[in-house]
Every structure is written in structure tokens, then in C-alpha cells.
Amino acid sequence: MSWFESFVLGLVQGLTEFLPISSSAHLRLTAAFAGWHDPGAAFTAITQIGTEAAVLIYFRKDIARILSAWFRSLTDRAMRSDHDAQMGWLVIVGSIPIGVLGLTLKDQIEGPFRDLRLIATTLIVMGIVLGVADRLAARDEAGGRHRVVKERKTLKDLGVRDGLIYGFCQAMALIPGVSRSGATISGGLLMGYTRESAARYSFLLAIPAVLASGAYELKDVGEGHVSWGPTIFATLVAFFVGYAVIAWFMKFITTKSFMPFVIYRILLGILIFALVWSGALSPHAGESAG
Image (cartoon, rainbow, N blue to C red; front, side, top):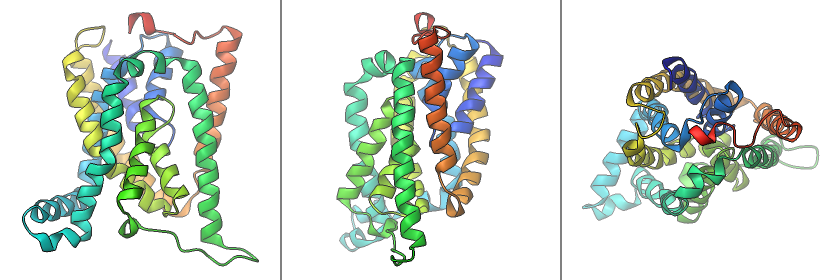
């Protein structure tokens, strides 16, 4: 991998990690469209550490408060009813599904799941799911002629059941094209949470999974065409770009709909299918050398 490739892929990772359009799919597609080798699951997981570092800094006050309350709850029974302490436990509970499935499906994640036809399918299907979820949220918030405004849930309403559902939604993102934020935000909206609450928990829930996945994949760097230098460079680029994107996205979702992302996902999925069916693009482009 050249330094230019690593810069472009780091930029793509930073731009797409927090948007509900799938960063892993865009890394795969960028390489395929450019005629580069598939960067692979290991490169993707490690560069996500960069964007996750942006989450740690952006939500540093929330994270510090949650960690402090959670650690105190281990010895102080009274603290176990504290909302922040409960959030710590719920992040742990919600991380179980992706941890188990990530290890179980490791071979599929690095192989069959990177087929461009599957990516196109998940882009379209999850785009539709996000669109439906967003529409239901908008209807509750706006009310209507024959409907009153329906109050949606916040993170104070989060329990073990919803935390596990969020976790299974996040685990779906093991398939490129699903999108970690897209799946968890969709799940949150369908369960009746506000856009801001669904996004905030989505980002907090991703921290253990992304950091563990990136650390686990460190051993594979340097085995193929991806070396340490470009990987670290791409991770740094992803961090700086990702921080800017998350700050923008958290403001965007308070007043705007997810429909632009829905339309983008569906059109991109259709484009991939058209290119594959016409023979202009191989569904396994770049895999042999990845």
C-alpha cells in the first residue's frame, strides 16, 4: 500500500465512520473503484481505532463520568442505581453480541462478507430500514392533524433489554455495508428513542468493540500488502477527519432527517449492482491480493 492510498483510505474512514453509510463498505469500494488491493478487515479494524479515539475525546466528559460511577458501583451498592453506573453496565452488556459473533464469524468477515454484491444488498436493505425508522421518529416528533406529539425515549429509559437489542444491531455491522451507526441508530429509532439518544449510545457502545477489534487485528499488519507505516498514517488521518465529522453529525441530527443518507445508500447499492452485472466491476475486485 502506498502512502497516497493510505491517505485516501484514512480520509474515507474518517468521513464515513460516524455517518450511517458504512465505513467498511466505503473502504472496500474505494479500493475496488481505484483498482487497488482490498485493504482487508485488519486494516479497516485498526484505522477505526483512529476514529474511535475521536469519540473518546469528543465524549470525554460523558465517558469519564460513566467510568467513575461504574467503578464506584463495584464496591458501593448504593451507586448501582446511579444512571451513569448503569450506563457502564449497559455498554458492557451491549458489547457481548458483537464480541461473540466477531470471533465466531472471523473467516466470513475476512472473506465472503467482502463480496461487492453482498455489500450492495446490505447498503440498500439497511438504507430502507433506516428510512422507515427515521420516518416513524419524524411522525412521533411532528404529530399531525389526528395525532398528538409522542414523547420518545432518552438514555435514562435504557434498560438491559434495549441494551441487548442495540448490541445485536451493532453486531450486524460485521457485514460491510450495514454500518455500525446506521444499524444501531435504526434500532434505537425503532425502539422509540430520540435521534440524539440513539446516536449517542451508538457511539458509546462502539468504543469497547472497536478498540478490542483493532487490538486483535494488530497481529495481522505486515502479513499482506499493508505495512505498519501506511496503516498508522491512515489511522491518524481518520482521527482528525473523524473528530470534525462527529462534531458536525451530532449537531445535524438534532434538526435534520436521515433521508439524505437513505437515498445515498440506495443509489450507491444500485450503482454497484449495475457495475457488477455489466461486467465493469468484479464482485471480488482486489481480493486476490488483499
